[in-house]
Length: 78
Image (cartoon, rainbow, N blue to C red; front, side, top):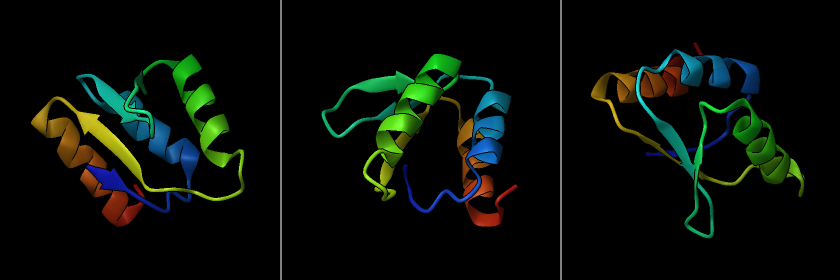
C-alpha cells in the first residue's frame, strides 16, 4: 500500500507496533525494512526526512487485519 503525508510519526509507529504480523517499508531501491524493528524505524525515518520532504512510501503488511489497522490510521490519524 502507498502512504503519504504521515504527520504523526509516533502514532504511526504505535500503529505498526500494534500489528500482529510483519510490516515492511519498501525503499526506493527495492529493499525491505522491517518496521517492527526499532532500529529500522529510526534508520528509515532518518533517511526519509533527511532531504526535508516526505516522499510517497510503500508499506507491506502481511496480515489482512494489519492492513486494516494501517488504512484506519491513514484515514483518521489514530
